[in-house]
Amino acid sequence: MPVSPELFVAGMRLHAAGVTVVTTLHEGRPAGLTATSVCSVSAEPPQLLVCVNRAAEANAPIRASGRFCVNVLAADQRALADRFAGRSGQFGAERFSGCSWTRLVTGAPVLEGCRAAFDCRLVNAVEAGTHTIFVGLVEAVAIRPDLAPLVYHEGEYGLVAQLPV
Ligand SMILES: Cc1cc2nc3c(=O)[nH]c(=O)nc-3n(C[C@H](O)[C@H](O)[C@H](O)COP(=O)(O)O)c2cc1C
Image 1 (cartoon, protein in one colour):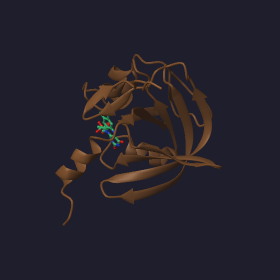
Image 2 (cartoon, rainbow, N blue to C red):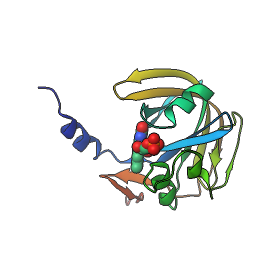
Image 3 (cartoon, rainbow, N blue to C red):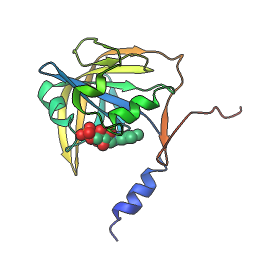
């Protein structure tokens, strides 16, 4: 029996995941989207992947620029997650207005106030269903372990609670 899209989505909604904003800079124009589909691939060499819908406006700029940054959001950055998911009606470079960003090595935008930033050079792009799997070689990392993480679960943002020992 093939698995229906509804059942697949119902299952994936139970997968709690950290929230990221994936950014790029192509021909001077920043672009980005909110993404939970980020995964570590390899530590030596350091590589990660992110799955980006082919219809997302940041897909083509990531491919064309050959660089992207995975910005891991902190607990107080829900508004940024909504903005980069297109939920506040902002598109393209508009999504970056009013938020400070810097650069590390590749030049992809590094958003301020995030828990971690993985600055990547694109090394592989694989088409899979509706999405492109972008594999990045991590050229720089910035970390803020003092900040709490933002997670997404059952269609809602949430926080991480420690289990009692
Ligand atoms: C919490 C959350 C996680 C998401 N994760 C992904 C993802 O991993 N990959 C993806 O392509 N879209 C993901 N999306 C959807 C995109 O953020 C959103 O559809 C996209 O930015 C809208 O398209 P646009 O950027 O072309 O406006 C996610 C949205 C939310 C709210």
